[in-house]
Image (cartoon, rainbow, N blue to C red; front, side, top):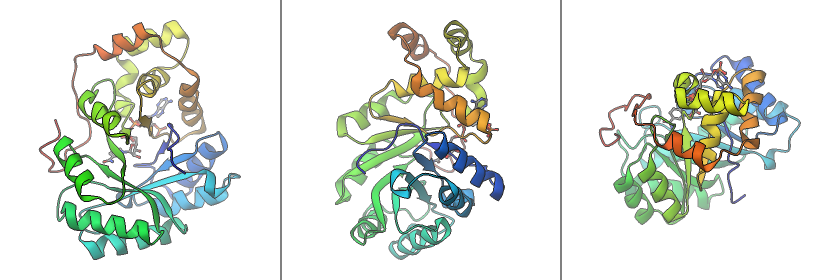
Length: 268
Ligand code: NAP
C-alpha cells in the first residue's frame, strides 16, 4: 500500500461505541477505504469493531491513528508502548499510517521519530505521518526520519486554505491530509459554496470536499456519523469543479482556524 485513498472517514467525537462501529462499517461498505482515528478520540476499539464487521478485506483499508503527547507521551518507549496499545484496541496486527498527533509536550524530533522508524522496522506500522506541524517542523522531521515522511494532517478547508503547506507537500512528495475539511459545518452556509452547490445541484459539503480533492497530494477526512452524511460526502469523488469554481473558493478571504491550537503557537 503506497497510496492513501483520497477520501477517509473522520471519527473525532464519534464516541458512542456502537454508533462509531456502525459509521465505520457503513463507510467501508459504501466504498471508503481509509479511516482516521486517534488514541485521543477514545474510539479505537469501536473503529476496529467496524472494520471487522465490514464485508471488506482488511488489506484494502488504510487505518490511520495518532499518538498523543499527553495521553501516552512521545518519548521513545512511550511511542513503542503507545503503538502496541493502539494495535490491541484496534484488534489489528499493523497500522497503515501512524501520526504524531501534536508536536508538543515531550515531542523531540530525534527521539520521537526514531521510535516511529523503529515501529516501521518491526513491521508494526507501514507509514509515518505527522499532524499540526509547520514548515520548519516538517523540514526537521524529514531530516531526522530514516523513512520518508508519508503524510501531514492539518486543518484545511475553504476558510483555512493552507496554500504554503500544500505546496510543501507537493514539492516533497508526501500527502497533505485535510482535517476538518467541512470547517466543522461552517462551510454549509458560506455563500460561494452554497451558490456553487445550487448551480451544480449538489450539496455544500460535496463542493467543499471537491475543492480540496482538486489539489494534488491532498486527501480529506470528513467526519460523518449517519449513512446519509457518509454517502453524501462519498459523492464528492464524482464532482469535478470547473477552474472558475475553484478560483472563486480560492478567493475566499475569511481566515478561521476552528480546532484549538492546543499550545501550538506556530499554527496561524
Ligand atoms: P468536519 O469533518 O469538518 O465536520 C464534521 C461535521 O460535519 C459533523 O458535525 C458532521 O455531522 C457534519 N457533516 C459531515 N458530513 C455532512 C453532510 N454531508 N451534511 C451535513 N453535515 C455533515 O470536522 P472534524 O470532525 O473536526 O474533522 C474531520 C476529522 O478530521 C475528524 O473527525 C478527525 O478524524 C480529523 N481531525 C484531526 C485533528 C488533528 O489534530 N489531527 C483535529 C481535528 C480533526 P455528523 O457527525 O452528524 O454526520
